[in-house]
Image (cartoon, rainbow, N blue to C red; front, side):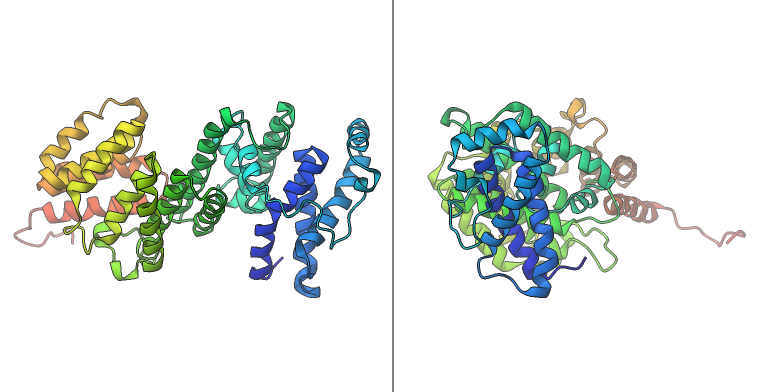
Length: 427
């Protein structure tokens, strides 16, 4: 089914608001989410042909209420909860409201939904899937395609996530202040995971999943709008904008990966860079400084540099040192080693990488041999660079990354091969 992009954008914007109204009213997130999905499907079918109603949110609430009541009345187990609703609310609230009735729909429950979908009882993959479904308005089929799994598998994953939330007995409201910070951190992490998968897909033939990256930016922008004084949410949005700004130059005509050093910087999105720089510039002085703000500052230095050679590598190295103290991630340590090489030479960078050789968190990961290959190439050790590029290619499941690393190895191997004095008789 082809949906008008303008209708699709409107539905994704309204989905969490309508879900919030139903979940708050009935106290059942899982059933409310099913009702909202059916309302969205009805709108996607009817609106392109009949026109968008004057009050689209009211229309969705009305349809969602009707479907919710059908679901409630259709389940024996729901009768007790229906009685509870009857005792809690006036009789007129047990029926679908008029489309133009405001109710409490003006209240934006997006942040409550985000916190609920990022419940600590859920695995990160389940939290990502549920967030994209409930808050992002993506269909199960769309989410399944994004993560290259069958639709039935993704449906089961989302269903189990909703069951976990239902079993937790959590009411539909903001967490208590004592746990709000941790839940907000989980929200940021889920949004970051969605963006990371969109920016560089871990599997499959394409380097980028633009739809996922765009959706992550949209949701993070909504989070920043809801919490304008939260410096880390601003930092996360800045990081996404500054990173995705380089997207158009990251791939060639055939979808091949183009490294940062080789990208045509005139193709970078200058408006996104300006917005990202402004966000992180405002966020850093407010504090406290968190890892997303530091990563955004690093991305800003890359985006503002005319070339790799003219990049402020000493400042980037200093920021990676700060970031390493904040998060202690081996990937951050790896990036810090590369920055070290850019400041002090490849030998210093390789020494820093040697310290990560036995870190179990990098075991089997392609990034370590890829970084080592890059630094050996910088040092002029082509033979070792070829070996490391091939090792890195064997470890990645991303087809574009695999091709890039294999081609780097092949090019260096060809440059290192001795020139034959006469043609081979087998040529």
